[in-house]
Image (tube, rainbow, N blue to C red; front, side, top):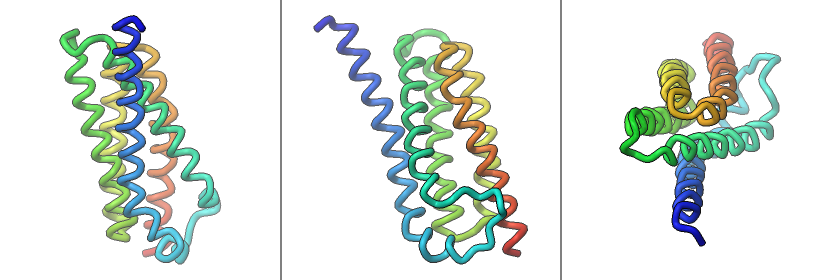
Length: 162
């Protein structure tokens, strides 16, 4: 197998696995709270059924991994690549923190604060990725849209339960 192709395969798989692991780490806080605390919350009419979240997030983490790959394959010493991937890593950590703030702490208020920071971090990541790879930036748009929706849900849950 050609060396650059093998390198791309490794980068793609690594990117996807790292993003899926972020989702798995977040689920440590989320999963136990769903049938107990989250089930007892008053939720807005636009809240999707619980079964929707796992496939949506799995798909979004897959798209995030592919997106990161498109940027990473430009070579780390290319202008802006290290910075863009650093910003991406920060938003990935913030994504995990949201699960622990909202579900782990059982705090829609803390969740709302974290998701606002997450939304801004995703926007900065999208911009940084677009400068390097149009495909990489475009693949993050569904993530930004979903987190926008999640922020609205988070805010409505806060209002309905205070």
